[in-house]
Image 1 (cartoon, one colour):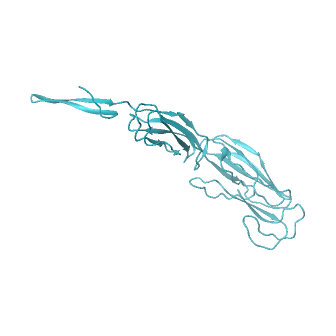
Image 2: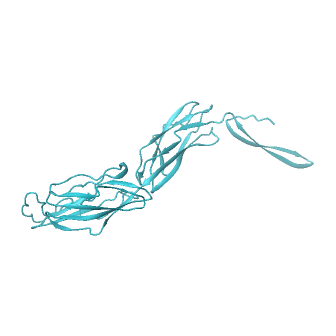
Image 3: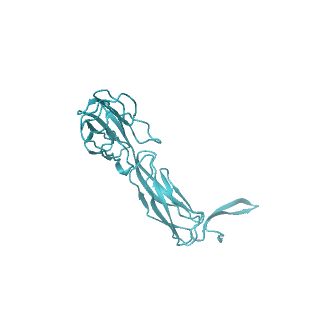
Length: 291
């Protein structure tokens, strides 16, 4: 029996022997035609930093090289769920010794550790080649603990507690600064930053002092996420999440007593104008701070 392949790759067949005097006999045949295609993929492992649920990480690059002696035809790339191919520069056919690059991003839909693979396949390869992928999806909850609204006079200080909890068994480090505040008011956090272990809750005290020099800053989200405002007021009303889990937002309302009050700030409104405040005082009114 001689095997004469007409194409690269595996081939299968049968040999059948028959006679009028006995039952037909069959022998299974198999072989590999030509040189099997192969690729080299560098690096062989991609580890992504913690990425927010609903967000997408920066792309990491994988180089694909045809390390065999035959052209890789019908070349395809595929990534596991939770990972995405980006900026793919690999053609459908890759000559021997040629290389191409593709990017891979991490886009978690849930919290916690996740793993997968980037698979490269070709009709000239007996099996696909893979790069291992791993990353951690990050999310957290934030809620007001205890009293969520106060009315104070200029010169007084109001405080509330913000509870933060990382989700999915992840850890997080939060750094706090105050957002937009009424005139002559300041805001402080205790602690100013906090490293929260997995499966734990951080309790942060926020104090707004009125009748002082104004302070304006921003809160920064952990792990390099885009900055967004944090609650620096006295009333927190959680809103809906964006996408499946949107960025947590709220409204901080500060009502300052004294004279006839009017509504000002993000909430807007109308009313009788109060008498002129003393120098350094926070004007009476209702103020809103989006966080």
